[in-house]
Length: 590
Image 1 (cartoon, one colour):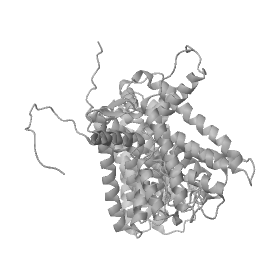
Image 2 (tube, rainbow, N blue to C red):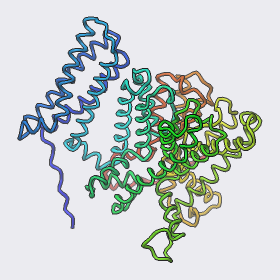
Image 3 (cartoon, rainbow, N blue to C red):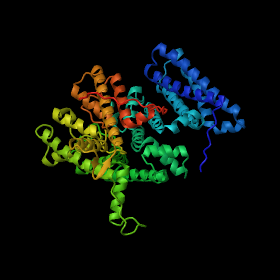
Image 4 (spheres, rainbow, N blue to C red):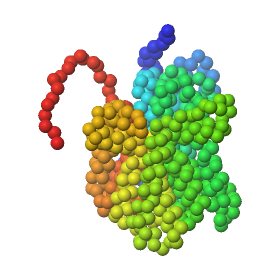
């Protein structure tokens, strides 16, 4: 019999500290955006000045509240030396910056005030994370509803990425990205989409590109899975709340194998990405040789491909490598492996290893069973890739593919079919594609990859369940059968919910974009589906989006990466069973 201790209610002092911490975080991020975008106007200068003074008061009050409550004053300062130093630096910099601006003295290094504010906000985020365990009510809510923690993790990753990309050293011009562009780029990276409003190749420095790659890596593996993988290395045990949250993030019901699964995910992801890097390195070194720059380009594209992100370090994406089998085939297989998902990869690798007796410690007659999910995903992937390749080849043979030789035509058609599985690379110009090709691509993007993978879309698993259900309706069968297995109505309802929610979001977003943007309906639909299904392909309208359009696309990428089930699980309220039964309704439909 297990006995669980209930958490004590938070004291008034801790509750006050919680409110101060959260309020300070939101105010600091708000002043950053105002300072970065509108600091030239006198009204926003006055507002930001008031807010910054308020933030300084809150940070100081928070620090001294903790100091007064600590048993050792000196020990508290030593333990929080980073926060104490940032508070002093912010006080000095605030006085300096305001004095310079009020006096009207020309200031050569205009990026310094913004850099100071961003560092201040990062320190406040760091301090907030340090206090997460003290936010009793917050952590209790998160452990009860893991879906909310997943959403919070992705949101925090996006905010952190936005702040980092606004730092001056991340861009070539030394000014950092504007707030909206930084938000768009960070969201696209964390949600492994690949849509860009600025040229990744020419706008960002090495540090900026490195930040984008790390955001892609964290978002591809999954913010929570990535975090718990680090925890599993540092700590050998999970708490009960950690186990529940990790099992939800990995869709693993058996909590006994969580740590093993997490370590396997990290090893598998890094192993595949490193192998891809080593293969791509010679392909990218044609003109410059095997240099560090080409090695970083190979690593970046390997991570971007396996995580199905679609970010490229070349202005024309991968169009310059359309005739290179080494680049095209390697990137394609990295995308496919990422789109299969970790459960399918793990099951497939173990089955192959057992088949050829590569795993030690197993009996010779012991075989690993291929799971139903693995069969569905691999079969669906093969069908979609091959059919997509021939459709693209036939529809673009006399237009976009006409200037290329036969081998390049088939290679380009194969590559673009693979990238429709939610990876936004391209080797052919999308601005010249026909209407038929774009419509076919929209369908393939909507389907996406496998459940539990780095890919987006409604997923192959969902489509397979719906096809089985429709087939059972046509055959008038009571049992829904899929590959020799019966499917419960619960899975059918979930699949219908995913598709209906996706169609609703795409339709409403398309309607809004037709109001805010000046582009054809087909191109807007393509952009909307590409964003929601985290594909990253574009017909060329992303860079010209209005601020409202960029924010709509940001919400689409965020919603699409989380998925309908996670969002519904986060907003669902627990209902009480009343024991009331209503009479069954009978009415005409259809």
